[in-house]
Length: 204
Ligand SMILES: N[C@@H](CCC(=O)N[C@@H](CS)C(=O)NCC(=O)O)C(=O)O
Image 1 (cartoon, helix red, strand yellow):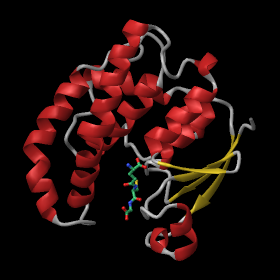
Image 2 (cartoon, rainbow, N blue to C red):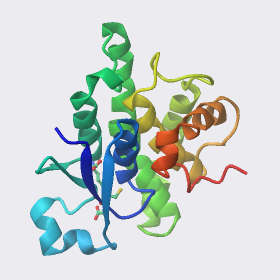
Image 3 (cartoon, rainbow, N blue to C red):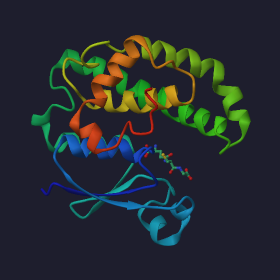
């Protein structure tokens, strides 16, 4: 089992960042291929990822899709790192948080952000503003001002950080109080810095 991963992504800010951060936490050597927007529909890439999305990774000769699943695969290869909590009760909270980030919040907050930034129809932001704004606020308030979502740092923090960072960048969440403390603690992690995960966030 090698500690080398090849990641196809668009930029530092996309969902490939979750994979890059996870891989850095686990000490992987990362080879990154950057696609230009639109190249995800081109034939060589489509053969790996017929869903025409990023990220795609190659790990030990296997092609893997879906950012959260890839992070999970990496975490399960190295259970000693504790990126998925082993303790039964902690896992209940872990899976709830993972699902909130990746299912309830991620696609809406990305659509909202892209809509506000003029990349997709403004109707997306209008439709999502109220329900997403409420849900993101509840989620943000549930973050611990100190420490992590579970007892120790885990994938739940990486997934939460992705939606919270975009929520702040989209103007849906103020970068202050407990949320700021929670995110600043994550921003200080060497693996997050190496992954350039928060570089796009204006913290001034
Ligand atoms: N559930 C997928 C979503 C992937 C996704 O939507 N990726 C975006 C970039 S972050 C993308 O490829 N967008 C271009 C497109 O959908 O055409 C995952 O987590 O990998």
